[in-house]
Length: 183
Image (cartoon, rainbow, N blue to C red):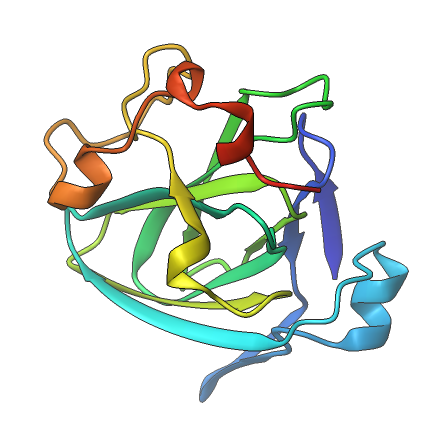
């Protein structure tokens, strides 16, 4: 397993070992001891799976009172995955990082608590699996507008399919401190 640091502290791109032959492949999407060795100390308490059609953009979402760490894996298809640092004391507050994740090159993204997460689908369809360190609470969810010009994410699709709720999220500078993750 290779662990690649990004410019944002607490955000890692992980390349699990993948064993392939003419029958297909096998990889471990999580192994406690190996991830502990990589500095990921979280206990994951919930696993989620989502499916999105091509051109869909979801996000940017986060939990406010109980921020979650996340480990995201694409099971089928391809996405452009984005994390935005919302940790107020972080030197990279308001900065973003994006990378492609797909089923053809097994990679994961790990986000420490305090990041907003979003993605857009680059393939006809994409299935994601993500593990989180705190249980999801719909009453605790926050969001930032996916096209906030102050953040300046360079999404790779011009006209994404974004739902009404995600389009209505405020810009980062419009959020009061009580709407940012509590770390």
